[in-house]
Length: 223
Length: 271
Picture 1 (cartoon, one colour):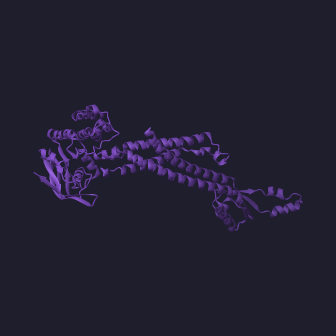
Picture 2 (tube, one colour):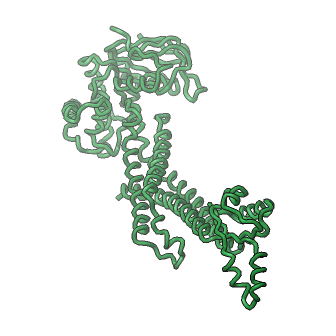
Picture 3 (tube, helix red, strand yellow):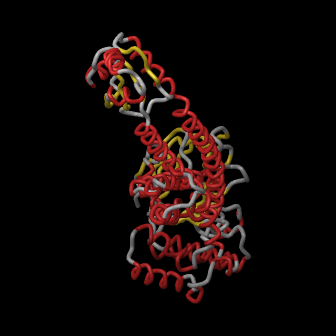
């Protein structure tokens, strides 16, 4: 399988001063499900942000979907992001938009017709079992339901890779399991690469997927 | 309701700025009209030994538009009452040439003084009467009022600009989350800030229409300003078609700067 992510001697920092990752080397292949764990402040979220071009590498090489991010133009990064699905711990739904409109966001950006958007949104909401919630607003939903909307939005354009930052961090066990099932399905059935940042270590060991751990500014494989 | 309030909070200071711009334009035009009126009604008197043509005067100073010779017989009638015919003949022979001079453009007191000096220095003119005190006193008062009004316009503009910026901060707060989420998902600038541009464009049009409508009304139906001739006689100057374009472009410039400031401040740095 080809690499979706390729990192060579990658160094990252936040606030331009605080280096969290130094000279890291790793690859993520198409269709892989990868957990990234590590203690607080180890740079998990920084690494995830760098994968969608929100943080630039200090040095080294970082390629996502074949695009070298360090010197990529804004429009190239915008283009890359239309091929990614991003899930946040705090959902980041637009509160003044209905559930359907939130899910349709990536389709709207890609310029899909209204009819096609509607068809896709109905299919996605059915997939995350929220068909009846299409016309509700995010603030009318529970945390678990909001995150299912977030997953539906991430899946909307059948992305090359899903990046999830603590997707179950605010959820109870039942809602968390629903989210894991949805992400696993995306990976297994659609061959979508899924990268999940989480601090829930026991859960990571219970699932048969690849595990990268961030420690002492390095990125290590856990076997 | 909230949306109307948000519009009004932006439209009202924008209207205040446009009002200031329109007042400025009107006063510039009224000043021109007033200067034209002063210039047309103003005449200076020049006295010379020899007969002079307009070219002779213009060679001395190009601001002289015309010279009208005062008929000597007319002057003679005034001063020769009761004189003997031979004395009248003598007076006529010794009378110099009197000329009423009109100006090509309005000159202020210094300009008039300079012109007078040039005429006297030419050697062709014996005496110049400028009647300067009645000429300049009204104009100075007018200029002073204009200066005060411009200061007020400037002050009003600055206060309104602060109100616009404040409202922009509110807009920034309202739209920040949505624009950041859209940016994360790869939406280009025009898509994520499209709604802001549309709203701001609409507000610019509404503000322009309100100000243009008010002044258009006054320019057609006249305005009673307590007998100030220069305004009442020039009510058509209260609004010209070009003003509409100037107002709209000014409003557009302000809203574009405002929207860009919101867009720039809502970059995804906090996500």
